[in-house]
Length: 169
Image 1 (tube, rainbow, N blue to C red):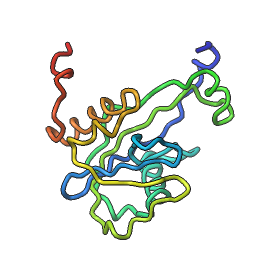
Image 2: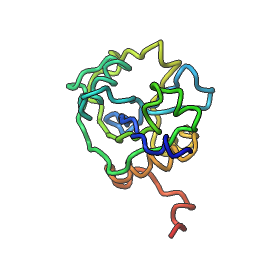
Image 3: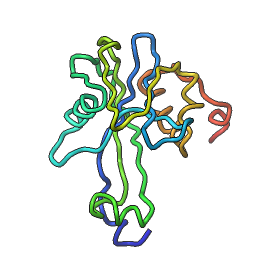
């Protein structure tokens, strides 16, 4: 990445890791994703917006909820942070950012699942999955590992450690 881009800030945003009362995780499949690609809800922060405003705005836009539909479990100390490829950094958001830095927030959905309205402009489908199913759905590079850190930090022990994690020093 060239030095000019590396000196630019990250675009801030939020990943909303939503769990229901039975500890099932809400995954969404964006319209541009392949059949086996899934993600959590969330998106970029608007100018002047605070984390909590960003979180509940995204949840409202994406699934039609309000703050009262959730209990915040916590905000992870582990962020999702990455640099864009150089051509993307120059093209996206007017070239203002080098990449993205997203806070990970875990929330318990306490509302009525029947009232969820998934944005057709953004999502092809959604599903609720058990913790042990996350690894097979979060397949982008480092996606599962990054989210696993936040989930283990805030929901202690709900995800089993993979054998490869146990042998890392």
